[in-house]
Image (cartoon, rainbow, N blue to C red; front, top):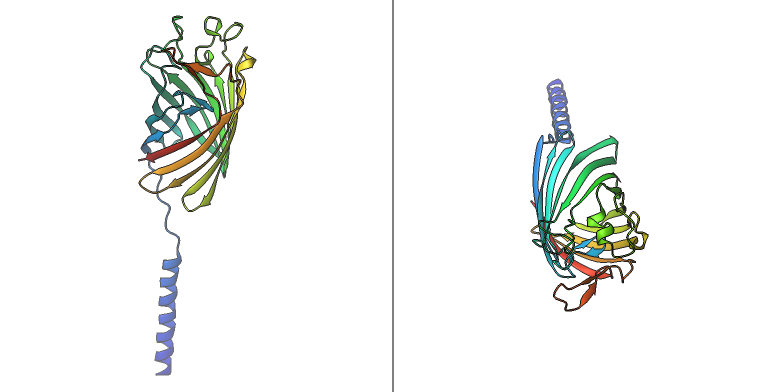
Length: 266
């Protein structure tokens, strides 16, 4: 009887051990889908691009979509209304088209290279016939919470050349660059703190160079993400002032402001 009881105990122990091992075994990681499609939409109190208002300090509705392949290649489109005071004679629309390749050479380090084109349907600088459309190539890297990215201009900087220069004409502005340094921290449940500083260089037109900054916090509520950020620049106010095309006043578009946003990614 004792032998039977001992045998039963041993069998029971092995059974419990097997169940424990099964329960403790890590679940197999979910397979990365070969194709991924996402969309996004947002409403903001002011559309700031590199710290400069694109909507004459008025609200904007924005949205786009992205496609990513498991190999690292991706394509996307993003759109926003812009002010006709800043982008004359057009549809009051900015359409961004981009594509690139992301890869991780080592753990926690992700690199990104791509092309970006800003398109403003119908818009041109005054009566010069010069378009605002702008093309750039970018290189970036993310390590844990820190991101560094550099954009290099392949075209004139949003139509800036002799015929459209707000200062003494000095040729084209191809080769302008922008350095973006940003950090994102999880400070609370579903709450992210963002710190950013950037530097814009305008080739041949150094008066237009400036530094911009952003301090923001965003909370994901599930149905949408609510964000609040302080954004500003040290841009020369006299050069970054936009006049109302109706002749009724002007606005300094690089001065600090608070931007409220509501966004959702699907």
